[in-house]
Length: 283
Image 1 (cartoon, rainbow, N blue to C red):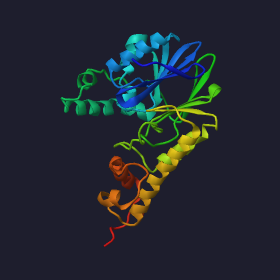
Image 2: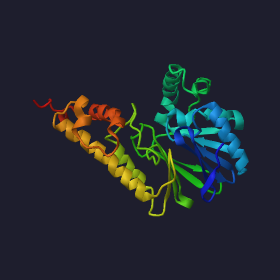
Image 3: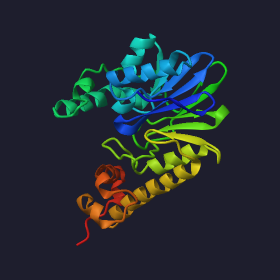
């Protein structure tokens, strides 16, 4: 159980201990739009109980900020609870939700000691059925929300949700507060800084930004994180230009985030570079 805390007029955020993941509810005269659905069917049932305890209306729409399981594995539970509601996501996220979900299930299947193993394996996978490529507005009756794909970063299907009447931006895992940004096997570290520039362009000095994980932040926090993400991208390019092999790169530079979290960033970044930017190793 977690309390939904109102961070702006009719915008409530609940922060769940498992992964410290955020679920956001946006109220309107047509019901609730829920952004992200937690990490399993069982976990999502708890979110649904918390929403009913909030008493702000029935869920009519779901949005997934990207394809990862801690943001999508509750989709089926919401459909079961509220009927055939629309689930929105970027087209790339919708296409990869089930394949990435199956990979996640296999990881949990291989770890019999994980306390969440059974509930993850029991979760039905449901991908979004309402997709877009660049941006789309959702009419909620007495308010409008905007879904924007700022570009590749944490994944190739990240979206942010802008609620303009209250100057709130829901950033998904393009922004994280309680831990450094996650560079996983499907990240795009060289694109991420530019995508963050688009995110910043959707904010003002008064914006409240809700990250995928952790407490809400302000624009200044996002600027600092964008600059650190830019330092990672610049370091990867510099290392490749110097001919440093990928398997030696972590020890060959200073990093704004713990180096043990950046192995995938190095590998993916080197893969992204054009052939002309990869020099032979120096001897």
